[in-house]
Image (cartoon, rainbow, N blue to C red):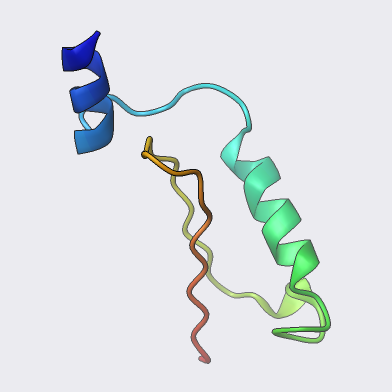
Length: 65
């Protein structure tokens, strides 16, 4: 419904379907090995969340500790 879609885009309704956030994190962290850092064991903090949106995307913010 239009209301449900609106609630999804506003973040009122959040996705609870696959993929699991731990699987998303693993793919992203592994893919950045050798590019953003030597090995993902160097990562000391990671925050991940799933949101509905008009266009599928992944946002990655890297900061040096």
